[in-house]
Length: 250
Image 1 (cartoon, rainbow, N blue to C red):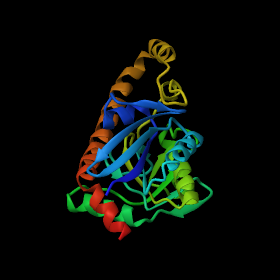
Image 2: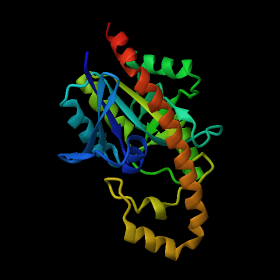
Image 3: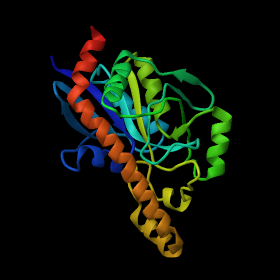
């Protein structure tokens, strides 16, 4: 039995690291690619940064009437103990005002698959924030005000669209920056809303601030650790996802 599901990934760098550089097509506003996990076909969409773009990408995927939507991506840590590459699979999500529990039978099956294969992850609250939490003080304030253990910029919008459509939704995040690491705004400001690097601005920023180079190298290592963890999840799901989804619908 063939099934269709969806994956929303925010940044091109994340999507191409996980699903390869070739085979992407532009379907309207968003780059998309079909991935086959056994007899389940996933449509992967690169949303770009922010809640509004994530909403639109999700609405695009929902037109295919998917049985399930998954959000793969990276997140920043808001609590000590979370290291780069650690997995967070939140049990609830907030935008700082509204908080919802995330629960679905496919999601529970996916968690069980990861646990049975020795993949460790943390549950907890994920907060979707409109801006990058760039400094340790920003992260501390965000944790204190919400109770969240990790932060991203898209998942809450994806959740709301799936909730309205009554389509099951699950989140898998991997930590990039830890709670005590600073994410330089002079670097993150070089990303367009689609997630592409504004090369001229980035180059100028580095020329004017050469002291950022060691931090950039550290950020790249953190990103590589996060992507590696997501790749392990993707590998396990590509083998087991059909069993999880079929059994959850029985």
